[in-house]
Length: 295
Image 1 (cartoon, one colour):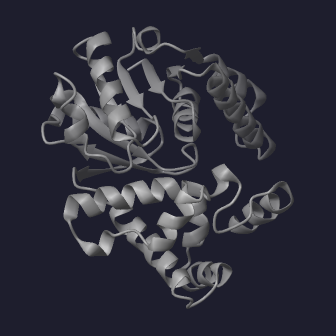
Image 2: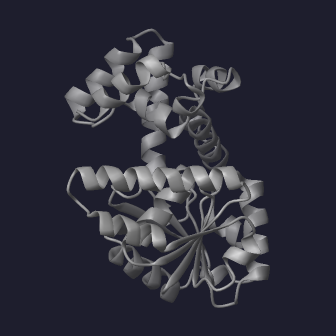
């Protein structure tokens, strides 16, 4: 597999493109916004520079990685010769169905179509195509170049051959793939989101403050980042969306989002992306918070 197309130049998309390119694959990075593409390339460049400063790669490695990435603003142009397409667009059902329907029409029949979705049914996504056996989930973790795990999600019709191809490919990327079946939240978020939600409920009920809750989980449970801060980094709107997917899928009240989470999202307090969530990410506070979280 020599050419991979990645749709979406945001946090996950540029991280996936970075990982593939650094491993030696040619990558087409696609986004309808030229501004988003340039921001994505800038992020990749910054992350490569950080790796140089740590001595993990050379300047030549950086230049080689960047040279393997080409950018496009039209899906049909970017996926034309791809052997694998990975969709990393916003976590929105209608948008993903629209993208996969288009991909099915503009790619060769043998091309594997993967989604980086963190919660949406792969079976549902595959239903927008005429090749459900070649649709699979590749749920990378953030930050993609660093995190080892990739959840490989099999839809109802995903073939054994496609699953093996993607599992083997993930190993070539230096990742550790874990095969899971297609149920709401898969494994990672089915376990993580209720924990985050319960942390928000703990705050909502006045049991303890934000920093106190996060400190208990970091020092007591050896988590590298507290659940409330992690929610800020994921995006509170994304957390709410995933919880709603699981609540709708399982019809179980334990997945019902905390009223505080709903209220914060309604107020536009989405975490890092909006500048404020459970923590203040204004310029004067951001560096201090980010630095503390990785100590």
